[in-house]
Picture 1 (tube, rainbow, N blue to C red):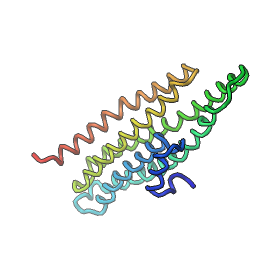
Picture 2 (cartoon, rainbow, N blue to C red):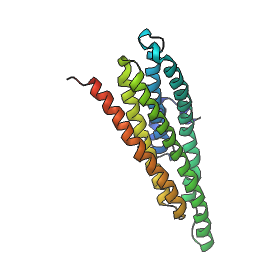
Picture 3 (cartoon, helix red, strand yellow):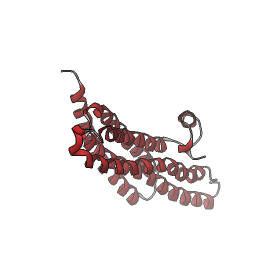
Picture 4 (spheres, helix red, strand yellow):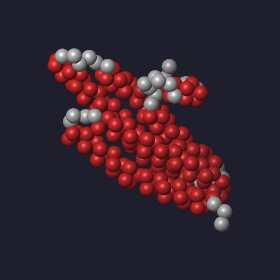
Length: 211
């Protein structure tokens, strides 16, 4: 069964077990999808309201983009598990002889590179979602602005969580040129989108806090 076809209770139960998947990467993708859906909720509560007729086209556009991101992030929950399985098997390879050690090192390096690709992709999707939340928070119904605030917080958490799954894999790589290239890309996403998410969240909180 696909991980995303499990009930919430089943997913959380497996997540808390000693099963190798799902782990932090898949959980981050799921949280990103939930955060994106909360933005979509803002759009749903804005579309069709006379008060927000001037932003209706923007909301329709945002919802199409958010629908796509939700689907892609849910697909990445499963893909993260699939990419981690070869790495999990590689850790168990024998290394009793020089030949076995060399083969394990080769398989491990290839598996590490594959395994860090999915969390990096999760980060990119979450960065897109944070941009959507910025518009939802600015243009959406004021009655639903708290959902944009929660949504951007979830997307930021997913972005940061996925980064740790990149770093744990790049740290173990022997190919340091490749590893540092991936690290730089990860660093850049965090540097740009964590502060943006913080600004959006603070803006929403300031609107809602009592004077």
